[in-house]
Amino acid sequence: MPTPGEIRVEAELSSPSRSWSFRNAYAGVLGIAERVGDFRAIGAAGKDAQAKKSAAGEFRSELDATKIAYTVKLAEPRATDVPYVSWLADDRGLLMFADLIPQDIETLSAEFKLPTGWTLESSLVADASGRYTVSESHKAVFLTGRTLGKASNTIDGVALDVVLSGKWPFKEAEVLNVANTVLQKYIDLTGFKLPNKATIMVTPFPTDAGNSEWKAETRGSTVVLLGNPKKFDVWRNRLRVIFSHELLHLWVPNSLNLEGDYDWFFEGFTLYTALRTAQELGGIDFKETLNTLGRVYDVYLSHPDEQSLIEASETRWTNPGSQVSIKAMLVAFLYDLKIRKESGGKLTLGDRYRELFSRRVTANANGNEVIIAVLDSVPAMSGFVKQYVESSTKLELEQMLPAYGLTLDSSGKKSQLSVSRDLNPEQQQLLRSLGYRN
Image 1 (cartoon, rainbow, N blue to C red):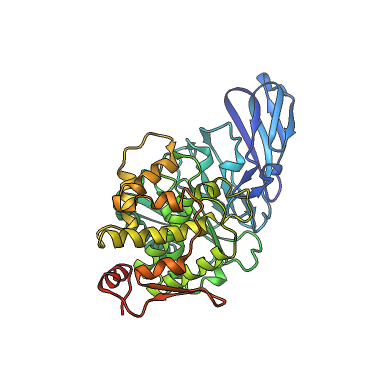
Image 2: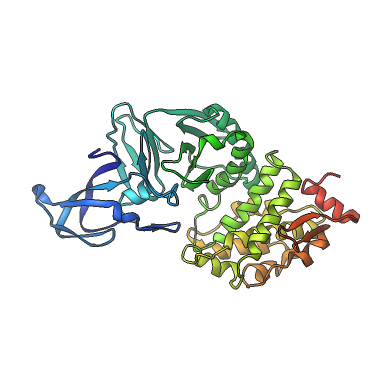
């Protein structure tokens, strides 16, 4: 590495090129490509191809180039940027090819030259010579450092690795045990086995993250969890809750070959499904589930609601006030209540995930169309999606929830979601299916 916190990249191109473009924005993080510097393009016989920067992350050369070389400054990323970008700090680093490799290069073979004593881990497997074949560079993630611990297992045919960097109040095998139960849960939920090895990378924040306890990102078949080890004293349930959300992303959207902006489903519906999963696995109880939904409703009420969920998905990262995931989580809750009630407890929202993965869908199909068709496929739910996903209908849970045996009081500082005093047999059966015990 040229200097601390900086890496140097050298790439031989499979065919001559004169232009290269680096990702400059992702998940609300801007200016990512500004870290790329000292860019050079080399042509035949080692001749300088005269590359120049035309804009942020954009480089052009006067001549055909067969090789490029450049540096990327990765020292001390902003706390708001992790875990969405590559970084190097102290004796560890997270390397994401999405912001290290030009977007024009999708398939490549990579070799790393690491400092003495450092190792490297990834969901990808190196060949005998230590090279990695990368077929989708924007999904490739590598954790590197001086001391990396690793534990592995196979759950129902799905391989899983857990990699730890730094000092934590738990061991790799303990994290693996927690992840095993969540992974099995989602294999059962979707009826779909992940085609590639899943990897969970756990590492301390590379910079002061203020009051943040943890942040996570799931990219390709890799889950990255960054956190403050000092705040993971009660770690088992904390990990169970985190994994309930992040591991589901290995399926939705990462295993769905769908196009378009359907964040309302893969974020909002995932939030609700993860909440239910955490409860079913013992990470939280039924009361905490209701308390969480009450807090979510307070967030919802604190922002204007003027867009449909589909419209809000399209502007999620450009609209600072976007709450698409918040509203969609509540819509998922309502969908689950209604489908349980209308089917007499025979169907749940969870069943829609198995239906989604069992359908034969054309590659690169429109995600909104496919998912809406799945949610609408139950006759009793006809019109629900049109009202709450495709239209900008406001949620008034105080009036909607009593039909399901729930009471919501939002007149105080905090909304209180609780079970109604007098339940009819149908309501009692519905709430028991959600984990209520009286």
